[in-house]
Length: 172
Image (cartoon, rainbow, N blue to C red; front, side, top):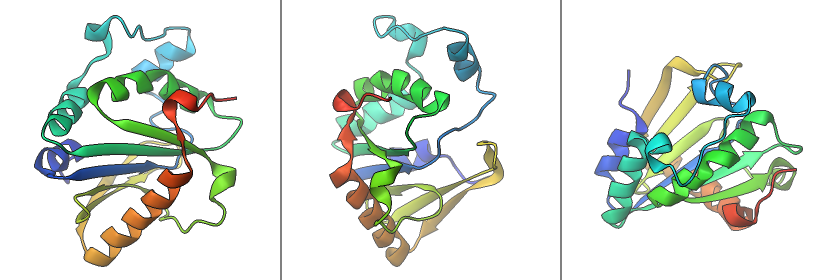
């Protein structure tokens, strides 16, 4: 299996951008299942929600890497997107910038068919998921190809320009 995003993030020097386009991921995630029964993260209880991903993002942003995440979402939003929205305070606390874009506002954009990361405008990490939203067994594809990196970066930037900052996006 290819190394996960955190390893590429650890090597990034300038930028890491992530485009998410699914309305649900990992439906059996214990955190999501607990959220569905009413459990909510407490921003004041950092020890209960801060994880290794947050450590990696915080380290990258301390090094000066701009870490940005854009999420394209259907509206009305799915329960999973509501869950993500509730947890995004952790991404922000770690130093990520996060924006949301309703899917209806993307119809004139050329977008890759799957979620991706681009690190330093050079390395692309595509994520391939099953129909249920689980990462496929061979679901990470690292590609060092200038043309694909440029296409993904341009797609991300087009979404980012239109997207709504997290603090201003309120899921319906």
